[in-house]
Amino acid sequence: MSPSLVSVTPPEGVKTAELTASAVAQKIEVAAHLQPLDASKLRFTKTSNPMTVPLPGDPIINTSSQCTDHMITAVWKAATGWEAPELRPYGTLSIAPTASVLHYATECFEGLKMYRGYDGKLRLFRPDCNCKRMLVSSTRISLPAFDPAELEKLLIALVATDGPKWLPSSRPGTSLYLRPTMIGSAAALGVASPKEATLFIIATFMPNLTQPKGLKLLASQNGVRAWPGGFGYAKLGANYGPSLMANTEAVSRGYHQVLWLLNGMVTEAGASNFFVVWKTKEGNNQLVTAPLGDKIILDGITRRSILQLARERLSNNKSGVEPLEIVERQYTMNELAEAVQEKRVVEAFAAGTAFFVSPVAVISYKDEELQIPMVRGDSGEYAHLIKTWLMNIMYGKEAHEWGVVVKEIEE
Ligand SMILES: *Cc1c(COP(=O)(O)O)cnc(C)c1O
Image (cartoon, protein in one colour):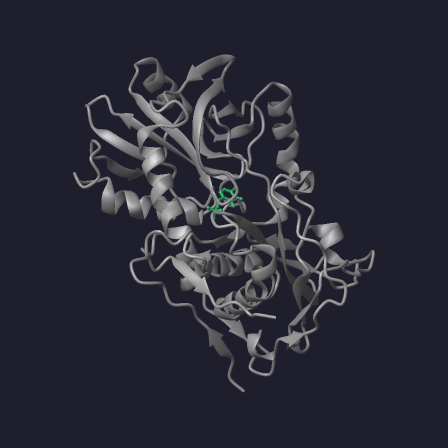
């Protein structure tokens, strides 16, 4: 039998330079006798012990531990492929002490949100991008391939089931976090690609992470997050555990996040992408962010959405602000520090699903505190505009193909 190929076609308008496009370039060979991941086989077992939805302001929300009534699981075995996925009551997973993930960090994950719109509808934001990125991550860590479109259908099934109760239409403008995860669950201690994997999707409450006075970042002086030839571009658990020490140090010194440098180059802020608006020495106004080509940074869905909106709406006179050149390039912390000192920095912000668009107020670099302007008090002008545009799409104030409406399952 000839192997069938799972190939992923790039969405309209996505440039091949973008990293999720490397999932596109990747043609994942799946032996024809193996079962593919198939959302149409999803089995439903509803909970008989429904939980209580916490009210806004309940302290449990800030613990990021409250999940919804259900989760989705699917098991893959090297010999047979994907078993039928299940939607079942949220609960603990049973795993052998020899499981690959517990020893070799064979794990990858995604993070996206479901949004309750002001029009009462439930939406996801570009879930196809998250599902494709998960394929990039799973193959990087020797976990199995799958058709991203099937993962998206599973996500939608969980949102359709738990969304109506957990994100009620009486609370427009709120969101819940979705965490698709894959782990090497094979019970075998050998250092080898796991022969069994478990995919699961859970939904949780997440605290509001925005800082009203802006983020304070500590530029990393010793320690890097990612390196050439490594795996910084993949959403692997292995990228995060080792970064917690630097984060703890930053927090103990009064900062919110680490600004990760690599050989002096600015890469990312914590688990978000990082943007600067500055005037070049030549007097050009630019929005600058680190590039994807060297595979050091994560290809954020927020990042790519900001770049696209900025190219459409900020590189011309359409938005009533000074137009910007949109630039993806390597730049150094010294360049940024010099621009701050010469008062050429207009603003800076971090961007990601969890932190959304978070204006940056301070960057500590070599024991100096660089003050970043926030002309609106709580934000710069550009971050404010971008945040408004994205929120309008997420919460249904602007009809846009990125806002995917989920049809809810009524009880
Ligand atoms: C998840 C993540 C981001 C942001 O990605 P989004 O898709 O925008 O949420 C940025 N950097 C790192 C390191 C991340 O883990």
